[in-house]
Structures are given as C-alpha cells and as structure tokens.
Length: 118
Length: 111
Image (cartoon, rainbow over all chains, first blue to last red; front, side, top):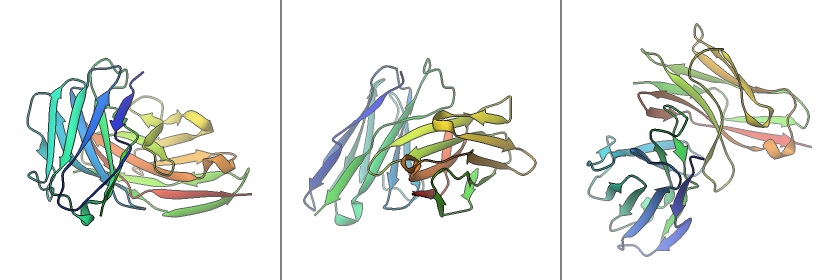
C-alpha cells in the first residue's frame, strides 16, 4: 500500500516552454502533498507543500509564479514549470501523506521526474 | 527549524564488512527520524523510521539505527554489506510533517 506515482518519469523541453508533472497517490487519499527538487549529487530541497483544495505554501526562495502547484483532488497534484530555462533542469520528486496510510507523519515518495531544458 | 547533518559525504567499504552512516539532528521539539535510500535516477525508499518507543529500530535489507536523544544522533548500521547496498543514503527529520533532509552519504561497496 501507499504507492505514489509520477508522470512523466523524464521529459525534455525547449527553453521558454512550460511542462507539467503529475503526482498521484494510487491507493490512499493524499491530504497533503510535497514537491522537492534535487540537483545532481545533492540532497532534496522542499519547494512547496500543498493541502487538497488549498493554495500551496512555498518555501522561501521558490518562485510561486514559475512553479505552479495544483492539488485539486485527494489523489492528484501537479507541478507546472512555466517558461522553463536550462537552470530549471533538475530531478523533481513528489511525496504524499494522508489518513489511513498506516504511517503517521510518514511521507511516501514518488519515483521522481527528470526534467531537462534545452 | 529542525536540521540534519550527515557527517560523511562518502563511505567506501568492502563487501561483507560492517558499516555505519552517521546522522545528527537539531531541533527544539520532539522529532521523527527517518533513513531513506536512493538508487540512481529513482525516488526514495524508506529503510526505517523512529517515531517513539524502542530506540533501536530495525529496517529493511538488514539495516538498523539507534536513536540517541542525549547525543541527538540517529546512526544507521549494517553488520555486513553487499554490493547491492551501493547507493545514496539520506537521513531525515520531521516535525509536524515538515521533513528536512541531510546532504546524503554515498555508500560504495567494493568487492
């Protein structure tokens, strides 16, 4: 149980375009979802936290107009990188938590999405 | 806010040798502690977690960790490593579901 998927697993886009990444909880209701960014050989940095039906809370230094997060349902959150540039190239990982997962205060992580902006 | 320090960025070890990956945390309130493993181009897999109770926590793949409140540590250990344990390991601390990660330790198991 407590499986989180991400789609796509990798994406290449041209500079200036937008790309959407989906994060789904497959077998539980995700009341809270998190988006992380990971640069090569570095740790995960929390970008934002979103609760279903509410606006996301962004970490300091994360541009909310560039990284649009939507958590419209209890099983789906999306991250849209708008007007992407090469410096946005990174590994994006989502996680989710919710009641009934059996792991209180535990986040379940998706497999990640590799974004390359050319 | 809470924070995590992983004391070793890289740990090389020979196959079948024991290993310890060190983690210290800082927090003014009670915390939950986690160890995750990450293989290349993959997400995080939970190895083990400490929420409460026994300070010695056993996880998957033969790993265990001990919570030491006085030393604010949560070191990960395995008595005998395999080649397949080569990966990046992250220690994480959570307060009210706000999870912060250490910089990671690259474990390399050599034959």
